[in-house]
Amino acid sequence: MRQHAATSVPAIGYLTEVVQRVLADGRISDEERTWVQKAVETVLPTTARQEAAVRRREAVAEEREQEREEDRLARPIKHFDVMVAGAFFDNRQVAIGGLNEGTKITLAREDKNPFSPNAILFLRPDGRQIGYMPESEAVNLAHLIDSGARHGAEVKKILEGSRGLIPVVWGELYAANSPEGQPSPRVAFAQMPQPAAPSVPARPAQATPPLVPRSAKLGSRIVLGILITLAVVALVVVLSALGLI
Image (cartoon, rainbow, N blue to C red; front, side):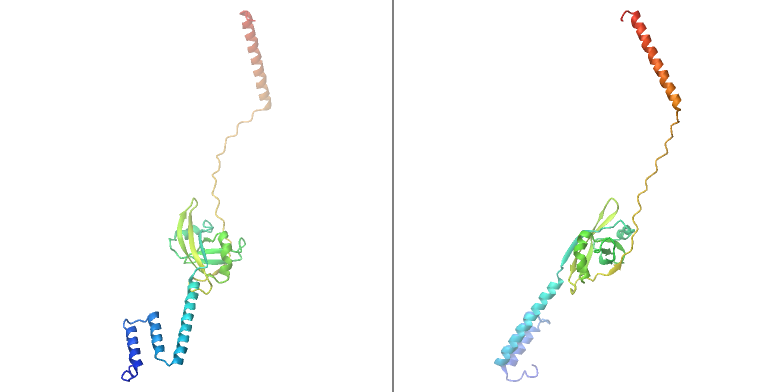
């Protein structure tokens, strides 16, 4: 337009003014871009103006559809907020002890887990395990992860139980083609040792009472019977002497 600014075509001056206003703040908004497009359309011949208007409307509709799709992909498809299962196994308390609120957590699908086909591990940023997604939630999420769903998760808080620390993890799953989150790795199942049972202190040995021969027990009973009989006889004699019987 600068090359033809000196010409007598009215449209040159009009378009130059529009462009200068749009560029005055050094940036072009969507509204300003539409304003320029409409300004150009007004100086075109009738047929070209109509074609340009149609293309502009199509472009606007396409952009809006793209924005809606991007918004849809950015929205999570599932939420979870769970207490970590299995936190007391496989020395996981050591790994849990290094967690903080907000620590990022990775969800990993565990292949060939003999206890659950839905096993989902929680991993620290360094790859160490802190436990599993509870089965009640894993059954609803495993197939989504297997289909490529992405995820974002972090430690919400850490509870102190009677046996140790229990992390609470919250997060979201996103569509496989979403720009949000990260993919879930797959890990092989490894048998984890069970926690050692608490040791029970042995009871102190009790002294065994000496054995008493059966004959001695029988003799004691006979003597006791004789003494009782003599006591009864003596009581009768005394009562007779007093004239009471």
